Every structure is written in C-alpha cells, then in structure tokens.
Image 1 (cartoon, one colour):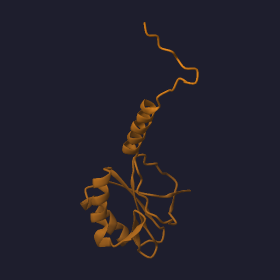
Image 2: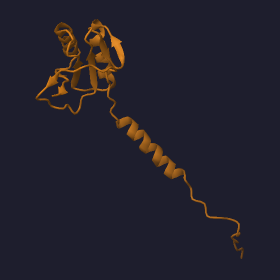
Image 3: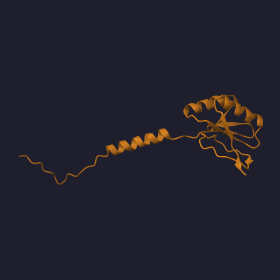
Image 4: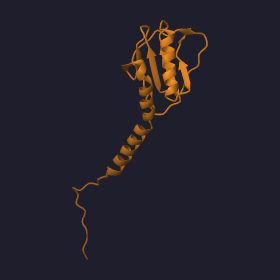
Length: 133
C-alpha cells in the first residue's frame, strides 16, 4: 500500500482565479451600464427663476454664451453643426431630454436656432437651465 505523505513545508494554497474572474466581470458590467453626461464645457451666467424643476435623465447639455458661442461636449460648435453633433451623441447614448444652458445676456435668436436644431435631431423635450432665485 502506497501512502501519500504530506510534506510539512507544503501549504494550502487558495486559487484566486475565480475571484479575479468575478471582479473583472463586475467591472465590465459597471462600465457598460454607466451613463455618461455630455456637459457643455463652460460656465454661463444663467438667468434666475423662481420656479424650476430638476431633470433627472438628461445627458446632453448645450451652453450658449453671451457673445453667441455655442458649446457642446466641451467643444465649440457652429450653429449649422449642432444638429449633426446631437445626432452623433444620441447614437452613442440615447436620451429624450436636452438641457440648454443659455447665458442671461445671450441673444434670443441664437437660442431659438439651437432649439430648432435640437428638434430636427429628433429630441422633443428641451429644458432651459436657470439659477435658483
């Protein structure tokens, strides 16, 4: 009869591979399910409003400066390209709300043109950001 002898210098080893597999699977899950917000990239002086509601599922922000510059996804955008950029962002991450952060001194005509471009891109819900006041 052959007997197995356990050597004293051998230790019990825990295999870490299954735990690492689970950690990597969880990491992939969280990366895939994370929602990324496309911020405008600049600060504007928003007009004050007495009544305001907070939009919970907005992922796209467009900023309009007082000199008429339009910022989307941390880059300056021409008015003609706003619709195309929104369609690109919608392909990456669909949303049904776009928030416009217009400066209180921004021209009304520029804001209306941006709203038209958003509507042409397929978004029906547009919110205008305002400061609490």
